[in-house]
Length: 113
Length: 113
Image (cartoon, helix red, strand yellow):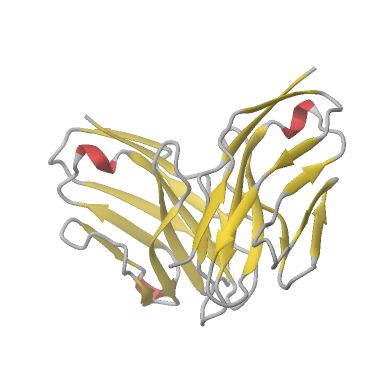
């Protein structure tokens, strides 16, 4: 079945450092890929998405590129801020019928001043 | 616009007791999801509704969990009787349907003692 594997956290960085959170997936066909973010005390929010190979999703300075050859969708940001501290979830959605998300285990990011 | 509303925010019960969670999706959203998020894991889909019909309940433990979405608007998820391993955050999400993004509520945190 479909699955998503994320790097374990927490990831601890200083403000303005470069961020990479690795995500790889297993799926039949070509799913859509997503990054969701969960800030403390809040629900999950869509951060960015990509729907086909070589697409780059971007939002709030975060980027991720859909790499079919390596089945990856790594999240990157050039300069993190304290306000980026949250849990980040990689997810995929298959293309059959109604949208159904399969999530990774999440990676906690802690950014210190 | 108003987001996905869930209640209660927290619930503590003893094993073998019953509990119910409520979700009010964003107005006009036809598709509603219940996810279970165990500590340290990604959200896992329990059940998906399209209007008031069930689209997917393949991962719902039907011997103890039930859900309904009367009139195709708000929804309740019930656990009867609860087990220790049911301790988790229960997330409700909704979307217009198709490939539109999911909107998540803040969740109900259940502790079973």
